[in-house]
Image (cartoon, rainbow, N blue to C red):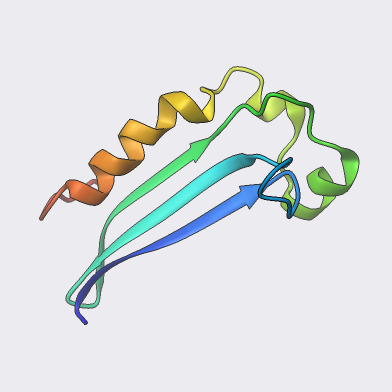
Length: 88
């Protein structure tokens, strides 16, 4: 496999029912080279607790002015759909 994406997320916990994504990072790899990257902090509906901040380094202040997950979904899907685009 020579073309793939690597996805990393940070969340407010491990529950798929109660916890939220607070950061998405994606690397697009083509023929072994990273050709594009996407990074976005996401504002959760509820405050990030101290344990998660100590684990991830992401604070409530860092996400205060960031978009909610609903506003990021389209960008993430569009990123996966882009081909042969290089960001500097």
